Length: 277
Image 1: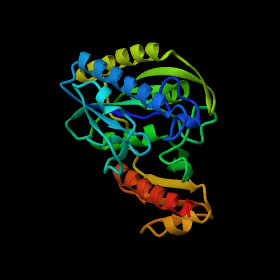
Image 2: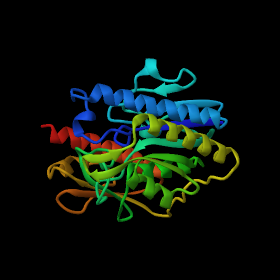
Image 3: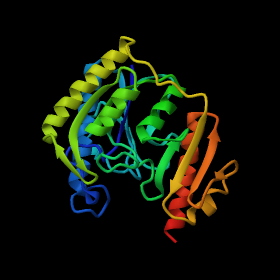
Image 4: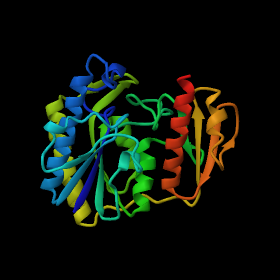
């Protein structure tokens, strides 16, 4: 079975401070090591569960965070950005299951560590059919478009609770409890990795046994973002088909989850460049 692991950084055990997330931050090198170790735990568990191939997609920021030399040599990995499928690069109809490691909630969640959706700098909120969504939820819809289920979600207690409500048969591994947006009570990294490995093994085993199903794709896909910078809507609204609903909000009626994802990538790129002027 082909397994895709999409690994982000905000939901990794021991991560809660903004300075841990970006190059130049005091603890960013240590955060990269923690992220790589959790990716390895998921790789190990996936092979233990019966995976025949594993690809790890670096899904944080510019996609250049994982320490390649430290990764499990049985896995291949995707580095860099932009990527056509963004956080799900290398997903295909051949993929048996996708595992979300180090994930987090969206910006509208009242609790949750480092919550945002796709671009914290560009987007104040991302909504689908009027409801705020996380990266995990839209990525799950993109996977479902190819018939692929989500088997595992790891991160804080809030994203794990959301996943348990939303993704059929998913295994969740909460590695920390949200105390605030930039504060958490975390498992020791070694304990988190043990739990992630066991969760990945269970998720792949469940997929092989047919105990998982892709999420249901709604009949309507109206994607909407509230931009952080007022003037950013001036340029983002130039994308054909985009409707501007107020000074900072734009929306688009997508035909597929992939089209919604593509649009978010374009909007965030345009809005981020405007914000940097």
